[in-house]
Length: 325
Image (tube, rainbow, N blue to C red; front, side, top):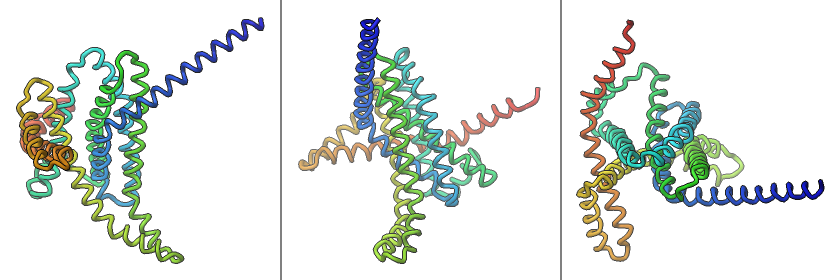
């Protein structure tokens, strides 16, 4: 009996060691995959605050919380199983789906540029596509828009993560994708929450009577946050268009049409060659700028298509669905 018990305990210890090694491996692979997806994570963090700016202070954190919950739902309940399923059964479909997501990012980002340059025409476009009836409806629209944008960026993150993992063990892949999804969501939306509430912290510090240094810091934060948020809004919009354009150009290259990607590569390599000391950085910067221009061109085409084709068609379909039998 004692020998059997010792053997059982030895087996349990062996299983525990294997489990611990698997957990360590999963965490290590998740960290490496998260680093590879860091570029899209930065874009996600830059884009999200643009959906919160303009609301009352007491609505900022609830809106961030709603978007964060939607982001987790995107990653864990939708994208994780879909990514594993498509990777196993239809890997050819991943690139076209990502390109559709890139098209959406180009449209969303270019729409913001259109609104800044042509506010009157943009207002008419907004009325035709998704007019809000009140403040609550506006908030819901902003949250839905942020979750849709997060879905595309999260899909890119999950695709990059999955591509960096060793094939075979689907359970380990699922665990790593879940770890990356939760960690990135916490990092992005924790940072967004800090950004949108920084002005309140600045006001509190500005009223600090006992420490002049903290009072000065608070005033700097209060005075600098509007500039910072406007800058972040511009960066977030540019990142959205840049990522969308880059996804589409890369997708076209994967599908066999190399011409757009070759043009971007040749131009960026040629300019980078001029700056020998910083060739890598200059080449990346030019490549990003050209992807941004490509995204703007694609987005400019999609805006009238959405306004005059997609929105009326969707409205007609909704009318048919709601019409009583």
